[in-house]
Length: 258
Image (cartoon, rainbow, N blue to C red; front, side):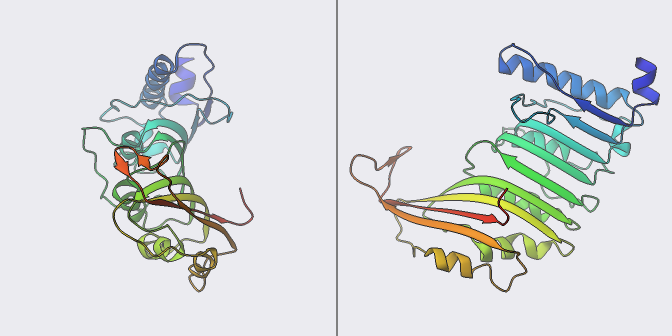
């Protein structure tokens, strides 16, 4: 088996089924992932945990080996990770041949450890990101990451974002902040929910037609959208520790819907 893993395996699919508590399972999965990276010298494609959508194992990537053969051989990776730090760790430049990454993230938040989120990723051609929880720091984490992907050809985003006293994510913002930096992009699939909590500032609330119009003339394919303004009553004004006056909700998505 060791010889098979080390010298022969080029494509590997891993699925872990366990009745253990999720945290322990995640640690076990992480250990197995690191072992695979260290052993498989010819590995080209790895699917780690995305064989079945109903599995809920998310890797806690604590530390990756400094050097291993897989860093220069791996071209495609599918993986579920617990935190955004793990995503940044996988994209810190060590996988220098990686051209296709499909990653599901349980929580988009970073711990105390600071990881590079600036170096360009010229080899990456395909990137799919799904967040399983609400994102509070979309502008701080997601936007800088996407801007690193200068040669991306296909982008898939499934996100739910919360903002305070800000704007809804629309076609203009996506184009100006992300797509304009991706000159080779030819396919963009997305489903993005935004909730803007109005605490202090009054904002111009766009209509659904305004959101639709924001996609015109910027190279998008067919897009669907929904927008809703909801005043808050005295009973439901608390958001965290903040008093909210209203919430504006939108959903923008590429068609056909996925």
